[in-house]
Length: 104
Image (cartoon, rainbow, N blue to C red; front, top):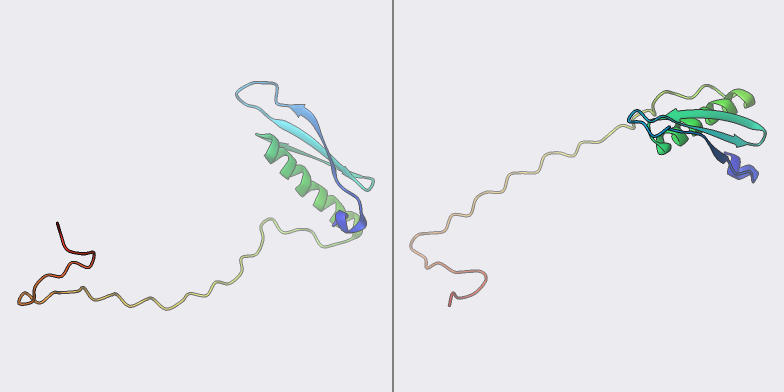
């Protein structure tokens, strides 16, 4: 959204987790005068949360409808099942032919 306007979001690490086993990271994203924060168990999740919160902030600011919690699933087309291949049964009266070549 903002890239079309020529503005790029700026992510800033607010809290780095503290080095414990229960790390929580906090990021703040600012863009075009708007700001949002996000918290996550890793930096990637915190950035993702901040970006999601920023999208909601932009939607509210511009009067858009609220974002859905999860994207709608597109309908999937199921192809008909493939027929089972019939097993190859060699005639016992014919000599065995090795498709790779003669055995040495």
